[in-house]
Length: 82
Image (tube, rainbow, N blue to C red; front, side, top):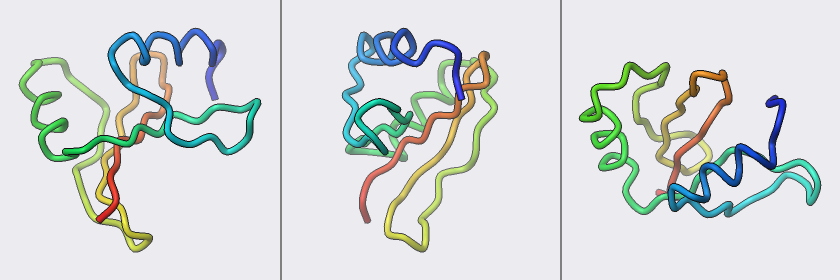
C-alpha cells in the first residue's frame, strides 16, 4: 500500500517504466515488466544505494523476478516471463 499511488506511478513512468498490468482499473500495482531482469538488478547494485531487495530468481509461475522496497516502503516487482 502507498499513500499516493498516482504520484508514485508518475515518478516511475518518468524514469522510463511503463505499467504493463493492473489488478483493477482503479488500483494500480507496482509490477514492472523488463526485458533483462538480471541486467537491471546489476545496474541497481552498481548505484551504491543500499536497497531492501530480494535476489533474482525464477518462480513456479513462470517468471524471473526480484523485488525492491523503496525508502517509502513501496514494494516493487521487476520481472519477465521465462
